[in-house]
Image (cartoon, rainbow, N blue to C red; front, side, top):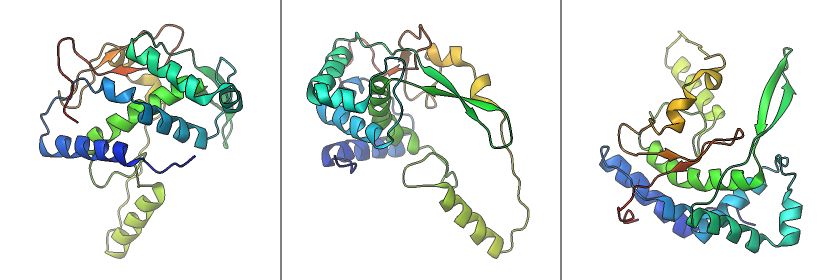
Length: 218
């Protein structure tokens, strides 16, 4: 199963990025129909499987999914997304020991939810990438911590000697989750979100849609 982004998805991502870059105030509506495309979900599954994560609360594994029929399983997700009956499941929590002592909570969504999250990421990432500062290296495509280190090394060689190291403690634990769930988070007013029910500790699922609007021409 290839992890290379299929050409059709890559072309879609390029169009989304270019539109967001050229028109910062453009509002993206009705990208939802792109998320439940067969090729997008299939590629999302391949990316999720490449991480070989553990099962979520439903106990479903990659082997179990494929032994019962991957195409049928993906079709079920696609149908639920299309008719908007998809709901995320609870997130399994495990405690991971920290090197310096203590434990860090780790949430493990079901494979099904991870596939849907990844499908959404394939569409959201190029839009938000257009806004990021070129000096930001964390959690970005084709960038890594090593790239950031190389940049710092070049600056040190150029004569810069002052380094500021800052870390936000428990940031994700303290951000206003209610605001995210209510759809208050926007790309400078560019994109409106509506979140599905978060009952049972489910993951945030973004539905970028508005009634009566035509799909974006991508």
